[in-house]
Image 1: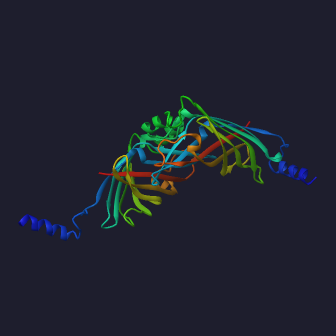
Image 2: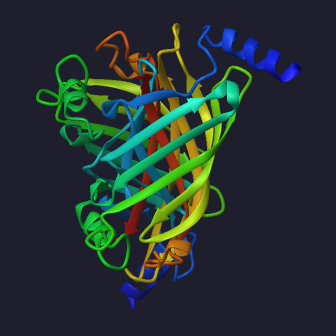
Image 3: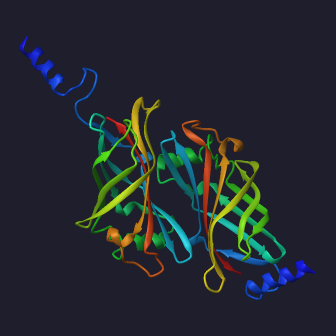
Length: 185
Length: 191
């Protein structure tokens, strides 16, 4: 009885929508995946994946959701052309053999306002799958809640996906910073 | 005999032993490991753009514990991955890359501790004929011997959060938030 009352209260608080899954559309222009790797422990090398798609369905009242991101690995872009060639090559992302990477999260933790704070799932990169969790740094839904801007961060070890070139000078740890702009579908 | 005495006097006057240098050591910016990024808020979205083309010099004087840096950035090399946004930022309302193609950051007398550690870089940004104060905090800094180049490399990560108006960049659409975060990856190779 208490759970039903809470779900109803949450549904009312989030704009009166019934407790039902809501699909969100990715705004590609306002969304980007960034990566960071330490170089000789001295400076941070950064880059992006410029092309990716995402399917998002969230049901905060039920505490459930599904986030699925598919990345075009050849869209890797460091701003340094010679590095991009190495990144796409066989010793790193091997984009010819692995043109896509994907992240699927089916365990979502929401905050009291119904915003997804933690996305737990699995990353498949260079053909190897490993658990990965994205944590929210910022989720901003504006006045009417129909558009949300968010930033999620995660950390992975590239050697767990077979990407060992350049170790240890280029660090094993890769930090991901994902900027998303989504609209209610 | 006279030249040997003169040489010895020069070494003594510099207060150094024969192995040390008497003047700042010049390092050339490594463009493959140097990048200037700017994080913007555009409405609800966060966008991280970068200037891809950089060049410059670092002069490091371990005897005085001071460094000087000059970093040039090509305004036209600005990239976010979104062509429309890039055109807006490079355009006349903001960077005006056609009329102000090069942005230069200069800092002199930067305090360096323990031979290679920097906490703060107080400098100025020159673009379109104007100079603006820009102070960067070091997130990390140091020098290392690069085994591939067989040379010492000095650098770090530096950042600042400030109003873009303070850099002469107050224009653009209303959705572009007034505060920006500047991130600098910097590495320079001893020459």
